[in-house]
Amino acid sequence: MLDGGGLGKITNENNSHNAKPKNALPLVSHEAKTNTIVWVKNVAIGGNEAVVMAGPCSVESREQVVSTALAIKQSGACVLRGGAYKPRTSPYDFQGLGVEGLKLLREAGDIADLPVITEVMSEEDVEIICDYADMLQIGARNMQNFALLRKLARARKPVLLKRGASATVKEWLSAAEYLLHGGNESVVLCERGIKTFDNSLRNTLDLASVALVKEMTHLPVIVDPSHATGKRSLISATAKAAIAVGADGVIVEVHPNPEIALSDSAQQLTFQGFSEMMENLQSPLRKIFVNEELAVCV
Ligand code: PEP
Ligand code: MN
View 1 (spheres, protein in one colour):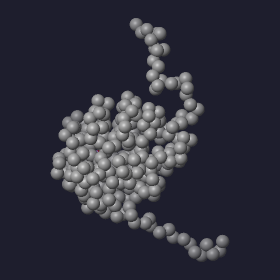
View 2 (tube, rainbow, N blue to C red; view 1 turned 90 degrees about the vertical axis):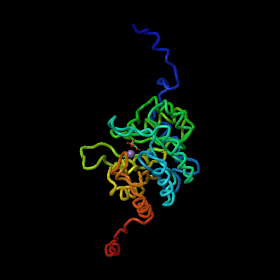
View 3 (cartoon, protein in one colour; view 1 turned 180 degrees about the vertical axis):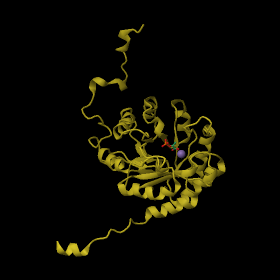
View 4 (cartoon, rainbow, N blue to C red; view 1 turned 30 degrees about the vertical axis):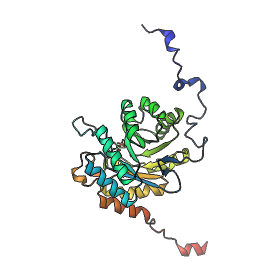
């Protein structure tokens, strides 16, 4: 039988429901601050310039990750991504190289002089991943893994918090609130597409929510057009749209030979495709036609 008295004895800092603030998001909302810049080594996210993070979905080999790091650096990316612990829908799919993948990612980052980001799937991997990575990614499937959020709140590394595929904006920001509440203020949000009625694409990129979240929070927000669309040919255009709507950057998947990638083959850019995307991001948006005649009449 349960000891009724015991239930009342839970008194950790996460259980402070007696002091519930009026604003549900006191730490992530603009009430707390106007703007946060998150530093990943020497890279500022949330400043004047939008940042581009890139790299393979999964770290597969030394050659693959080192060549990708050098290629994306050459085109202007400032953070290298690469998964070592992969959240795969099927247990029969490639699950990542684990610690070996972390080592290869770190080595590639050092060779190209780029900070590295990788996903943390479980609490037990946090320490080892902190030994190798400069930024920790909480994947969409773990956005509401509260034990993991609490653990990363105490990590001394910046966190990229992806939006869950079925998460509302409020749930997403509440997950970020856990990180700040637990002591980690270096949080970057990432919209990576949500599930809707339309299955024409892998997910539906919710750009309006990016603009909304920029209004609601002082935290930087970036967009992942690879996972949002699942389609290589759409990455450049949607990345540009993300910056146009106010995102602080994008994170995209790049592979030396996407056709043979061990995960997410259809949504990884080639080196050439990535270089074209970078050029497209630098070029101005289409000119807006202004009706001079009407302007004179007014
Ligand atoms: C990834 O970045 O490789 C990934 C699995 O992303 P998401 O959590 O957004 O699906
Ligand atoms: Mn992927």
